[in-house]
Image 1 (tube, chains in turn yellow, cyan):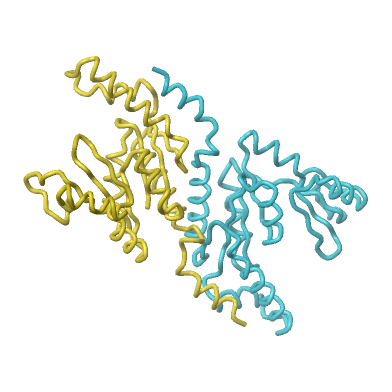
Image 2 (cartoon, helix red, strand yellow):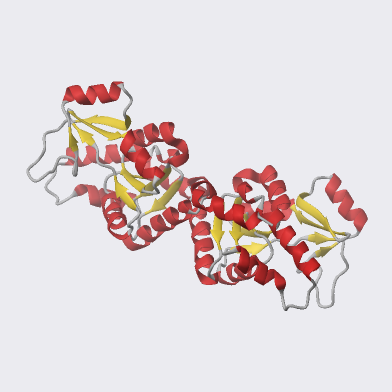
Length: 200
Length: 200
């Protein structure tokens, strides 16, 4: 479970997309949501669309790895799907905030790798959050405040990458993923090979 | 402190040399030894040559990160030198066996990254340990036994890399080193930057 968090405006969405496109062994899990499908969204592919009652039951039965309610809609990552995938060597990318990260870490600490992306500078962060210049100062100030709040939780992550160049940042994220896949504890496929090497 | 261990014949010496040549931020520490200098060896560069009495005093005063006696000669890594280097951002490569690894890990757990190299197959290991074909079966059998014994401690390492191709293996070792340098806990230089990002 490869978690990437960042304040909005630090390039997380771009890096996530690049990773999903170029690495065949990582995918995103299909979340459950109580929000109605948008045109073109397919149940079971984009989301599992469930009723609020069903969602509440899943929360009560601890069927989610993490869940959150945003603007009145609930979103959750089903535990069963991810656990089955991990067993088969499938890696999962999570594009979540620090609270979701904490929930995941508490549940499956050993399977979690946490990466935090930082913007290259405060000026660049402000530029990215200013958008097309059509938003009011208040809206921008609120975005900056949310970004600062997210950054304040950077110490809950294993790795930190400063995104001052999108390709360099992507290479770094890929190096982290490659290294974590070489961890002995994850290379369960080697156990038989090592046993063979040790047989006189 | 970047530790590489492997049974002899798994390519550790080659990988170490490549790393020292191509990565300016990693070096080997200068060890102390009680063995007499060989022609051309320079005191303070190849080794610190010390008397047995001085070595024993350093052991008693816990001045070594790890030490061992091999064929009657003692070798040790001075703690002060490495600790000072680490503070300045210098990385150190250690080409040591599982016992030295344990000693280092017990002393400076947080600063240690442990990598174990495996040979590609039992046949290839035997081929590499057979040498030029001039050694007796007994000598080869003893080497194989030592290799097996070293391999049996592979579970004391953070990362495992199978060396089936020297360049691919080197790239993997470099990825591990690159990733470990991105660990938040090692990026103390970012603390000021993050504080700045969080200032309204």
